[in-house]
Amino acid sequence: MDFFKNLDISTLVYYFDMNHIREAIDIPIIIVLVTFVWSLFYCLVKYFSTSRNLKTIVRFLSGFTRNDLNFRLNEMDTWMMNNPYVAPLWCEFRNTLVFSQSLEIKDGGDVQYQDVSSTVQNVQTTADPMSYFNEESLITSRFNYKMVQTMPTILTGCGPLFTFLKIAVAFGMIDFSTQEKTISSVSSFMTSMQSAALVSVVAVASSLIYLVVERILYGNLCKRPFIKIRVLIGELFVTVSAEKFLYEILRESKINNSSNDNVAEAIPLKIKEAFNDSVSVNLVPYLENLIYGINQLNKEIKKVGKTGNGNEDVDSLF
Image (cartoon, rainbow, N blue to C red; front, side, top):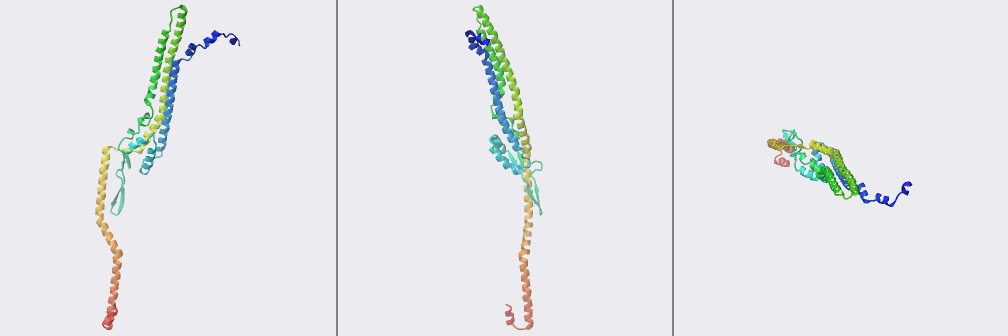
């Protein structure tokens, strides 16, 4: 209570003087801290958003195996095209896919299925998947990554900028006109020098903290899901070189020619078998019945000849 009793107008003016308020709230330090907090918040928002999209892709790709692509490629294509995050990349990558199918070869009466290639899967790609699903296309192009990388430099540069600015202002405030003003201005000058040094310390410290936090967040939120996507896509799609792809085409052509030759050789045999089956099923029973009827007719004629009844009995047979 004694403190409030001893207050006077001059004391109140001292405590509420705008100069002292500006010294208590150093504008350059506030600018550095606001820049640091804003850049860190931007980094967090973008990294968490990117991480959520990447983890969604990882969960979807984890449900596929290389053999599943033979009959589930349409399902993957539909999901990828409906996902706006990865649809443009998948649309370009889909054009590099090639398909090798099994060929049916008939050897005599047996049916054999022979793969076009025994060393690769049915769904292949002629380009490296990492050319499409890389770190730039999946992560850094989704936000202003250059600004994120530049923020430590900006924070560090704010330190010397505001430090020299405050020093210049402090030198301009020194007044040597009287002894009292000299003492007061020198005291204010030392305070300004301390504040100028503090700006550089805050700027460098915020830059280091931002750099460490940004690297940790990038590695945990973005880099790890991206590595999983790269591994999954590499396991699902086998890359075939141009030379190997041409070799597969030639091999497929040879197998087709062999299959055509087998079919051409089998056509006469199949026609013969079909004719024999048709004759045995349809014509033979008819001929048997015809021969049986002729034999019965012959027997009747012989009986009529033995009895000697003449032409009338022969006509009665018909």
